[in-house]
Length: 534
Image 1 (cartoon, helix red, strand yellow):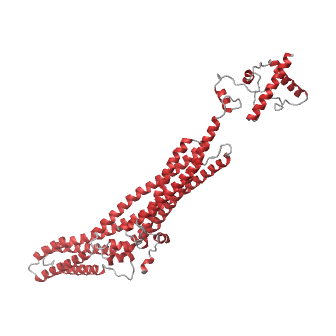
Image 2: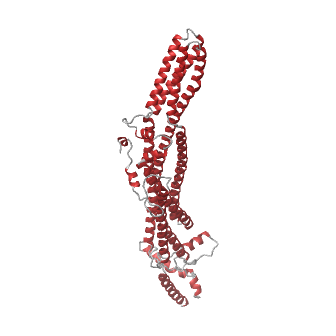
């Protein structure tokens, strides 16, 4: 590894990802070097997506087994304890909510980091494209001025100085210097094709990154909305909302595994490039730009010689020589040929502008500018970009776990809601102790008043052909008891009042108590009937 590699050191996570097994679809190990155009290398990245698809299939299989066990291995409702199941559903919902919130937070951070890295890459590409475009523009402009402008001035001066052979010889020497400058400029690499490639790569990268960032933003928001609606469905015990969220949960589970496969393949492929980017860049620029030039800009070491030093030096010397010749002609030829002054001043202005272009060209061709853009691009891709993609992989894993827990909790909650509704529907509508019957009676005043089992005018009494006693006789024990309680200095306590004649139900109710109470009522009815007949 050369000394210039100290400027760029690939992060440790790129080496970790680079060491992932690279296996094609025929289960054969292949070379780990970055070769996006190679079919086997493409299959190795697709293989990572296949691994994610296998994980999705295993996840769905486990969910199917769980749901089958939940539906088939049902206990009797009398033996089933509702409190543990409720706690299980509650804690599952809490765990799913926490994992979703953590996943969304990690996803937002990873999406932002990836976007920052890609933005830094495109910014560096645009800067490099501007540099390359400036070099190409300066070379083209200088060559054009030398070929057309200088040639026209020299042709007119040749006619003016036709009688002076020494001046004509000076003009011929200047033409040779101009041809030499053009020759050196033609020796520079053609940057036009490289400029077009950099611009197209930057534009395509920026467009793809925009849609990638927007897609992940929508996925993050959708994950959060589904989690909130699922929690709302559990709180409201809404079966249709839970069913809808279960369908969306399955879709988001599939999407999470798909994004995991895509992110993992992207991270591994980018890491393969980041481990040795110089090899790939040299292979891509082969035939367009010389390898010594690419090496000069990638490493930019002080020990490396500038490949443009010789043509730039010849360019500078030729311009200096031509300027000296023009100064001599202005000093000695203009007094003899005043009409030549305009063309000589035009050549001097052209040489001055060419010298300014030479200084700009020397600055642009220096390795420090393009090497800085190269290092910024590598830092953006290999540090921020790959790190952000790893966080997106973590987001996909957490989201898949959260939706798995949610899909396990929703069927249990749905089953509990169904059991509660079934138990509620089994209650007798005519039961006086049924709260729903009381609500119906209070909401419908025209509804026939429902008598208590404690009343002598109850339906049970009529079914047994028992005539209710007179109100004075039935209320006598009650009045007597109340009067006695008041006389002995105590407040009347309705808890101690016998249930006979009360319109309120006992504190608790069960079928056993109901049967006992009916038997007691029948005995007391017979007793009062015998006393009345006597």
